[in-house]
Structure formats: structure tokens, C-alpha cells
Length: 302
Image 1 (cartoon, rainbow, N blue to C red):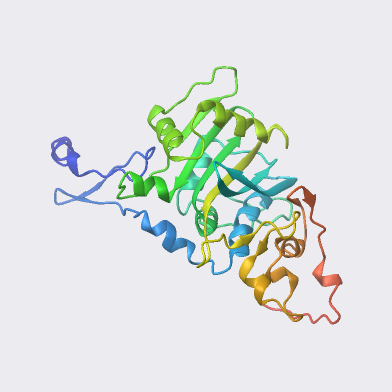
Image 2 (image 1 turned 180 degrees about the horizontal axis):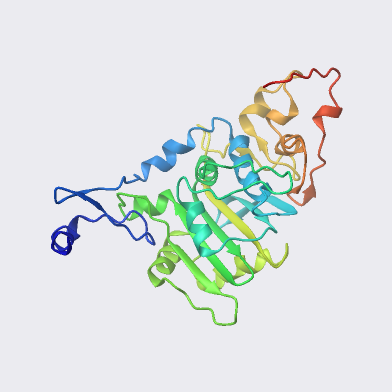
């Protein structure tokens, strides 16, 4: 078996930067692991035909019991002249291992706690949601012991001509020794993200402290645009809201406000709100739909 391993070393495929891959052998030929093409990031995102459902994926990640965030802040900002969406919570934060799983496909360890059932169970929400909103996303996260940064970027993969999905990740200790575990990933992040120095990365990590000692901050850029080149979101009409341009122009008296207003949509997002949502600096007032309907019908299903 040792000789066989030596003979097929060159055929072993590495699917991700921190994965250690082995092969199964049949008649001295390796059974190769499946690869994921960078094009799948876009293809996977097309499951969201409506941008608010993509935003809901990111909100759900903060809402779920493994994160236990009390608040999430959703905002618009401009970095290096580009419109960006930002999402920040004051949850538990992500260890390096958990961040890597979030940036990968199909990994989910969420479990119900105290009658709080997680929304996400398939390990796909962050990828489909973030890549529907924009081509590139960077994640800053802090736990009690570490601070990590991870990049999921279609632009980066295109620039290096990648044949499979790579996710640069770096981790710093929070003990006063800012040791970078992966210099190659750091160079990739500084070259292909909106942040070109370690100082800028630490500024974003410090921004989480405004929400709490731990938490996660996501910034998405190269936002999807309409046919006339504008972003699909309108950030100007209401300084306390994020609106969908197409739905604003088509709205009528019969169109629910939740179809084009993120604030209205988030107000009815959960039957049992457990987390405060703040959009552009103003808290969302949750509405309990079951108490506001004129007529309620109840079906029992077995």
C-alpha cells in the first residue's frame, strides 16, 4: 500500500486551502474527490430570484441558536468608491474551523436549544445569499480567543484563473501577539479585497467591538446591478431603509410594502422575533402577523 501511495501522489487533489485530502484506491487507481468550479458560486446563487430572500439567509445565520446574537446591524456603506452592504452581529463569533465550514458547502452543526429551532440546516445559506447580493464577500469574526478573516470572492478566483473554489483565511490570536497563521492567505486578501493593509483589517475587527466583545461582520461588494448599471438597491430615497429599485417603480396600491422595503420585510420576517434588527441605524419594529390578520384559519397536519 505504501508503494501505491507513492505512485499516485501526483494525482491527489486539494479541494480547499486547509483541507487535507486522501484518496480511496481500487485496483491501484485513485477514486478522486469531487471538485467545485468557481462558476458554481454564481449558479448556486440563482436559487434566490428576489434579493430580500438572499438577505434573509444572512440574518438567519445570526438568528440561529449556535450564534445567539441579540442584535444585527444592516447598513450601506461606500469603500473605495464602491457601494457595499454590511451585516454585523454581536453573537458568539466563529472559530477558524467554523469559519472555514461556513465558507464551504454542506457543513452545518446547528442544533435546536430550548425550543429555538435553527432556520439553517443545509450549510448553503451564506454562499447562496452573499453571492446573490454581490460578487465578493469578506467575513470578519471575533471569538473570546481568536479573530479571523475569510474571503469568498468571485473576482479573486477570476483574477488568478482558479479552477476550483479557494477561500483565503487568516487568524490572529487575541492575547496581544497578532500572529498570522497563513501568509499566503494574507497576501491574497490584501491584494484582492477592499482592504489593502493589516491596519485596515484590524480596523474592521475593532468595529465589531462596538456591538460586543464577540461577533461577526460581513461586507459584500460588487453588488448586482440593473440593466442601466445601477445597483438593484436604492439607498437614497429613504436614509433609514434599503429599497428594491424595480419593485419601487412597479409598486401600486396592491403591492405590499414588504415587496420593496427591507425594513417592512424584516418587520414580518419571524413569527417569534428573538433578535433585534437595526437597518441603517434605526431599529426595526417587529409585527406579529398572527395578531394583525383580519381572519385566521388553522389547519392541523399529521
